[in-house]
Length: 465
Ligand code: GLN
Image (tube, rainbow, N blue to C red; front, side, top):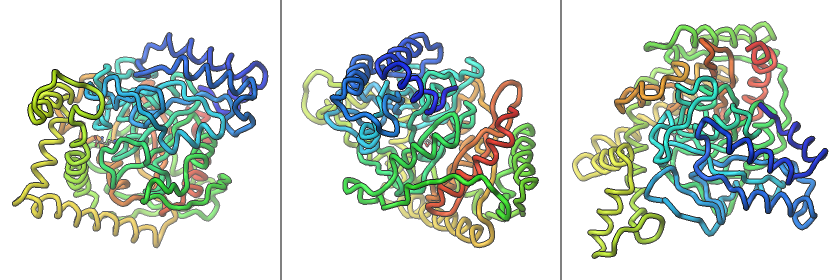
C-alpha cells in the first residue's frame, strides 16, 4: 500500500503527470473492479496544469490522486451511484469535499465502485458488478464503499473517500485491512453527496494509515454554507498516540451474538496492547444496542424512499421512450433501480404510510434517542469505546444472498450512526489471510482522540499483522 508521503515524494522526483499516468496504468490492470469510471482525461489534464503552474501547486495533496466514491458529485465526471438509473449522468457541479480536495492540489483519478445508492454491506449490489477483495478475490471487500477501500488495499491509490450511513466506510476498511473514519454527524459537508439516509450519513476518509486519514479529515471537515447541518470544527489535528491514563469502555453487547472467535480475540489483543501502554478498560452496558439494527433499517429505508423520489426519469440519467409523466416515471424506475433499492423504497414507503407511521417510523425514532442516551451515559465514564467493527472477516461473494443476513452483519456499526458519534476502524489482526478491524468510538467531535488511539493500535499491532 502507498501513503500520501510516498506519492508526494514521487511527484517531487518526477511530476504530477508521471504519477497520475502510473496510477492510471495500474488501475487499468486492476483485477478487483474497483472503479466504475476512470477519469483518464480529466486527471491527466489537472496533473499537467499543476506541473505547468496553471493551477497553484504546493497544497497538502499537490499531485496526489484520490478515488471518490461514485455517490459524490464531480463536475464533468460521470456519477452513477452504481445504479443503472444514473447511467450517463454527468454532474455540472462538485461536491464540497471535492472542491476542498482540489484546493489542496488533489487529483480525482476516478469514481469508486459501491453498492447501488450505498445500500449494502458487500458492494455486490453494484449495477457495474461486484468489487473483489484484494486479500482474496473470492471474497467481498465489504460495503457499501467497497471500491474505495479495495483500491487503497490493492495499492492502486493512497487515499479515497467513502460515505458511511450505517457502516459503509468502516465495514470495507475492516474487510480490506485499511483505516476508515466515520466523522461526527455534521463535521463534514454533505453538499453534493447523493443522499441515501441524510440524517445518518457522513462522508469519510479511507487510507492505508491513520495519519493520512487524519490529514484527509482535516481537509474535508468544517462548516459549509451549502449544508445547514454542517458545523465549524477544529481541523488542526495533531495525533497523540500516548494512551497513558486513557479509559476504555468495552460494550458487552458488541461482543455477543455469534461473533467470529478470531475477530473477538484480535480485538482483545488490541485492547490489551493499549492496556500495556498505560490505558485501563472496563466493561460498559449499552442496553439498547439490541434494538439499534431494527431502528436503523426502518429510519434508513424511510429516508431512502423519500430521497429516491427525485429519480423520475426526467432530470437525470436513464430515459425511456417519452410517454405521459406517470408511465415514464414507473418505467424508468422499474428498469433503472436494482432489486435491493426497490425493496428498500417499498419498505420505507410502507413504514411512512398512514397507519404505520406511528407504529414503525416514530417508534424507530424513539429507539434512536435511547441508543444515543446509551452513548451519552457511557462517555460520562470512559474516553472511548472499543468493539469489533464487523462480527466476521470478509465473507465470500454470493455467500450472504438473503437480505436479512447482510443486514445482520451491520449490527456493530449502525448504532454509531444513530447516535451521530465518530468512529474509526483500524486493522488489529487477521485470520486465514483476511484482515480484522476494530472500531474506536468517541465523544462528539473527538476525532483527534479516537485517531490518537487508532495510531497507538496501528503502531503496536498493525506493524505485526
Ligand atoms: N449496510 C448498511 C445499509 O445497507 C450501511 C450502508 C451505508 O453505510 N451506506 O444500509
